[in-house]
Image (cartoon, rainbow, N blue to C red; front, side, top):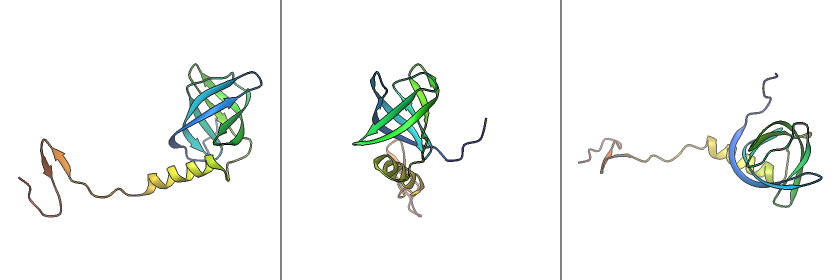
Length: 118
């Protein structure tokens, strides 16, 4: 098994997975430029399908499948479109530091730039 060439990013993106015979609702739970894990549906390994999101279609092949989730590899890496935009937003949010917020222990805040609370 080869190591992944792209880092997967955790997301929650509702999609429709379409095959020749069926339309299935699913949720992309992790995404990279080269593939996705979709929860909520499953297809046989090596099935060809398309992932529909926001009017945009991405083709893929099922690489692995369990009863309620599957891994799909895209034949062409994502470089644009709504799924790529969501991937970039999720990647940026992951790298952006959060603002300082004091932790609460019981009802009293703890910490905070030299101030004592309580």
